[in-house]
Image (cartoon, rainbow, N blue to C red; front, side):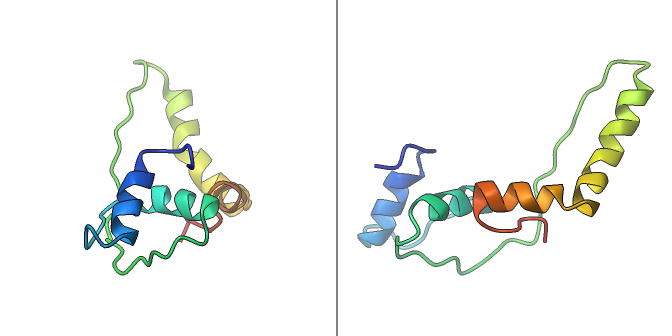
Amino acid sequence: MWKGCQLQPAIDLLVSRRVGVLINDGLSLLDFRKHKPDTPITIVVKHPDSARNGFVFRKGGRELVDAFHTAPDDRMNDGTYQKISEKWFGADVSK
C-alpha cells in the first residue's frame, strides 16, 4: 500500500464502487496519482477557489514581510515553482 496521506482507503472505496464520489484537495490527488498512476479515477470537477492562508510576522519585521510578499512571484517568474510542482505532483499546479 502507498504510504502517503490517508487517501488510499477512500480511493479503494471509490474504485470498488462502495462510495460514489470523493471530495479532496487537488494536491493530494495529484500526489496520489503520481505514486499510483494506474488507479482508475477521474477528476470530474475542480473548484475555482483556492485555499486562503494567514501568516503572522514579528512586529517591526518589515524586511521579512516584504521578502515574503515578493518571493512567490519571483519563484513563479523564474520557473522554480513549476519545476517543484512537476517534481512532487507530476503536474504544473501554478495554473
